Length: 148
Image (cartoon, rainbow, N blue to C red; front, side, top):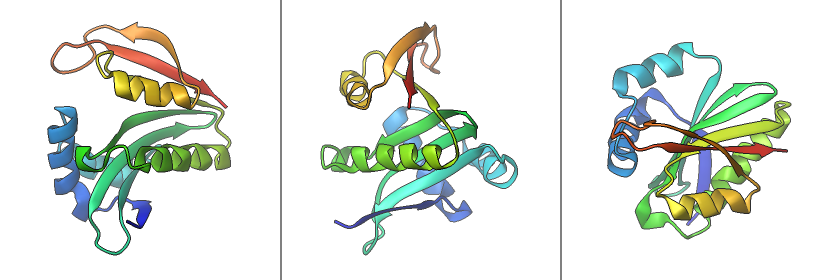
């Protein structure tokens, strides 16, 4: 396995939409992603894949408005979890944000996703508040914060 992170392209959109739906249970949709890629200077989208085989491992999207940033979506495909790829991806995000002058990062996570919460806590994220009925299915979200 030789993971690399690259900017998402328009060609990646169908795969991202399918994986968002499969893994997260919801998606921004192809139209929104196309608009975001073309017109939103604050949001950056990245793909994590194998350098040789181009196998898709994961995705992260980050809204950046220095000194603040928010992870919009982040995931590793279930078949590749617990192989260090999540750490690789979050460390990439933190390095990127530091280089842009950011010092605060937030994200939302389902309170039922104990593995993700523990993962974020490992990097120093703390729960700030609850966003009621945040997800499409009505589940709340824990808002987590990292100052760095």
